[in-house]
Amino acid sequence: MLAIEADALRRTYTHRTGWLRPRRTETEAVRAVTFDVAPGELFGLLGPNGAGKTTTIKMLNTLLLPTSGTARVFGHDVARDPVAVRKRIGYVFGGDRGLYDRLSALDNLRYFAELYGVEARAQRRRITELLDLVGLAGRERERVEGYSRGMRQRLHIARGLLHRPDVLFLDEPSVGVDPVAARDLRRTVADLAAAGTTVLLTTHYMAEADELCDRVAVVTGGRIRALGTPESLKSRVGERAVLEIEAYGVGEDRLERIRRIPGVRGAAVEERGTAQALTVQTDRGAELHAPVLAALDGVRVGRVVSREPSLEDAYIAIVEDAERAEADGAGPEESHADGPGPGESHADGPGPGESHADGPGPERRGPARPDSAWPGPAPRGPEHPGTQEVPA
Ligand SMILES: Nc1ncnc2c1ncn2[C@@H]1O[C@H](COP(=O)(O)OP(=O)(O)OP(=O)(O)O)[C@@H](O)[C@H]1O
View: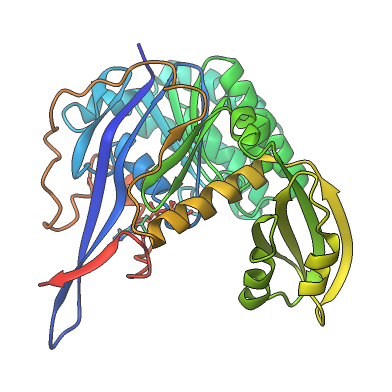
């Protein structure tokens, strides 16, 4: 049996804007997403801000009803049988919420163990095991308010594992965590998967996804654009080479100028403190140092390095292709880089969560879990490709 099956999952948010001329704004956050995750697999959802990753996770973990489509966790339908699903899953999200700062880590875990119905006799042993697993043994009597972000994240993971879930959802676990703590976190996550827990992870860190994930799906505009092993995604840009340039003050006009150079397949810039990392993807064998540097004339430039494409380059290429396709009005462009995944998806008609597109958000309230109080990211407005205004 598959751990997760998502079949044509959709989720539309509706909210009202304006006062004199009220408008109903619909955001299609997730648009017919289909994928499977095998038991024990470590699966990554990658995508830019607003791509629909968190919304997908919240449907899979029963915090949000799908507008249409179905999802199952170990065979249990998330809309029809949320209680059974919740018994099998844990949810860990990045950031500061979800823990009680003024309590010690131990008291936090005791509290959540009660909440999750961990048997009183088993609690002490389970908590000790988890403190060991996440590397917090010896620090458990300190108040969480004194914890570093990395320690908090590890405590979050321990909390998410208290009831021995078969599937752990990790939403950006390493956000804001320093590189050493992030490495420890990755080790913890890899150990979990090695011990048989299915992990569904979202991250913006491609190196993390490359190191950890058995397979990844790249999501933009609510659709899966590519799905496969990190290697298979990288092979999509295998015929390319990459120029990485340290620069200061590259704007969109310069990027456009670089993109127009024959032999350039894409260009992106990432802010790194005071500097920028400019990545230019070129045809393999094309000698483009000179024209690229000429296009940067007047911009302060540091080190220039040629290297092989990484998962990040494959990701950028996929996202840019998807953006171009959206701009051209093309339909979904999903491609499975290495076949359709570990199993077939099962469509058995729309679940009971269907047709909530224009009601108040069917966010589940559920039992008193701190997770369910999480309000989710703020609406990001109509700049999103899936957002449109309709008369109220
Ligand atoms: N509660 C909400 N109400 C209205 N729109 C929402 C809500 N939550 C998310 N959205 C919108 O849905 C889209 C997908 O958001 P989502 O948070 O799922 O993306 P994401 O890929 O997780 O992004 P990030 O990487 O920034 O966390 C975005 O356009 C967002 O503005």
